[in-house]
Length: 99
Figure 1 (cartoon, helix red, strand yellow):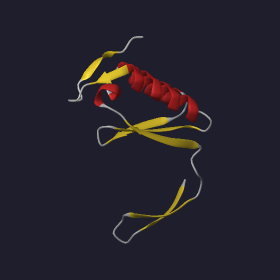
Figure 2 (figure 1 turned 45 degrees about the vertical axis):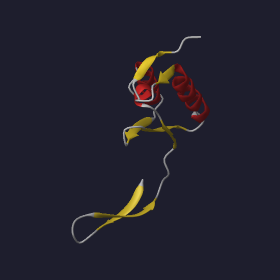
Figure 3 (figure 1 turned 120 degrees about the vertical axis):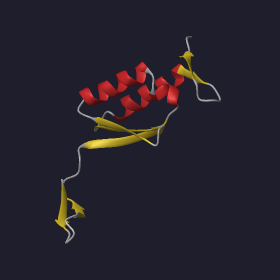
Figure 4 (figure 1 turned 180 degrees about the vertical axis):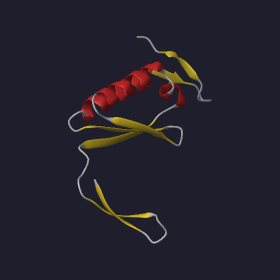
């Protein structure tokens, strides 16, 4: 929750954070192939199911807001996800890499 005041022009002026969110934020710069994959979609669905949220900025920045204590799990899943795809120099999606 924030504290704010109304300006003369009708806008709002941010004053302070009254109550901090219980969510922790993490961010990564990821390729288009990773972000557009069904595997990434599954991860984002899981983040929402755990009470978190996510956003994508500037095309390749993934920001996640997750419950405290789940940072390691999500970071590990993003790492697995990025290791799953090979990306060409032109940014084109390739098939998942199999061991």
